[in-house]
Image (cartoon, rainbow, N blue to C red):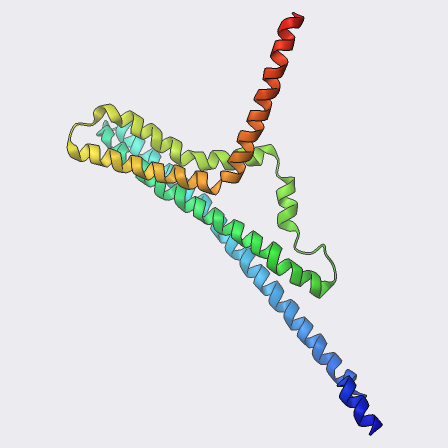
Amino acid sequence: MVWDDLVRQSGTAPGDEAVHAPLAAARADSRTNLLVAEYNAIRAVMAQKSAASHTLVGAYLTVVAVILGFVVANRADPRLLLAVPVLAAISGITILRRRRDREAANTYIRDVLRPVAVECSGDDRVFQWDDFYARQKDSRSLLYEFGLQLVFPLSGAVCLFVTLPLLGSVGEWLAWLTGLSFLVALVAAYVHQNRTHLARTVTGVHAVALSLARKLPGRGRDS
């Protein structure tokens, strides 16, 4: 009776630990393998999206160069440039969407996979590449990313500005307004996705402007 009570309270009979230990180890190994496989799959998708984004930028610049070549060298109708804002908006929004997907993947790795990896390994230094890379970004990387995103709206705006004096028919005005609407949608998507960074930039510029404004009167009195 005493033995039965002990078994009932503990839920494990002598010798069961030797049986359950290999099962627990196998489950831990399977869990780790699944975790690593999911991490590798996410990283592969992120790399694929990044490569596709750079390919899209190259293709867009090539198309714009071809259109400019037709207009400048072959003396084609300059109103061909009305196609550029539409292409710019489609390409730019696609780039922004892929960037948002990469950010979502980074967040998933940091908030979902990393806690599980820390629990499995007992080491809190795993899956820290994204945070480490974000800390190591210098100003040149940020300027490159910012300039890459501005290629699309700037090129589209220039084409709209150049073609504005050439518009005559209703169809041409409709094409111009269509390009303008696409460009506005691109700028709105850009502002919405980068609102945090833009707010920080505006705050920093405002602080610098206030600091300069406070120093200028003092310098004027000293002189």
